[in-house]
Amino acid sequence: VQLQASGGGLVQAGGSLRLSCAASGRTFSGSVMGWFRQAPGKEREFVAVIKWSAGRTYSADAVKGRFTISRDNAKNTAYLQMSSLKPEDTAVYYCAADWSIILSELRNVSAYDYWGQGTLVTVSS
Image 1 (cartoon, rainbow, N blue to C red):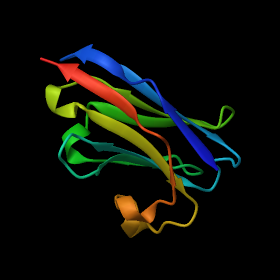
Image 2 (image 1 turned 135 degrees about the vertical axis):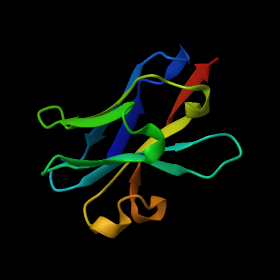
Image 3 (image 1 turned 180 degrees about the vertical axis):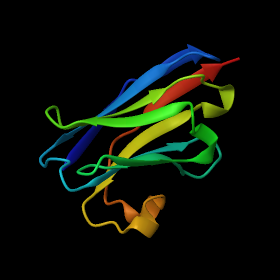
């Protein structure tokens, strides 16, 4: 399984970006697919996750109301629509997937076996 994250870039505060995560080698069907981020000098943290088959989503408090995770079954691709971006959103964003995570582990970095390479999001003030 390979995950390819893309869509990062430089944006001004208040702007928007959409990240994509495409999977190859396996469909996302039946998986949990998440977005995480890691700012310089900080630990990787949970951003949002989607239970692929049900479409149920969960988001970190820091991004609720600003970021939306979604999926396209036909393209086997997940998205993170980011709006009202803030300088503190600056980080490398990673997508991750797993097919055997329990509900209580959805926000846990170590619970995911498959990771994309990361895409850098820089928000200028």
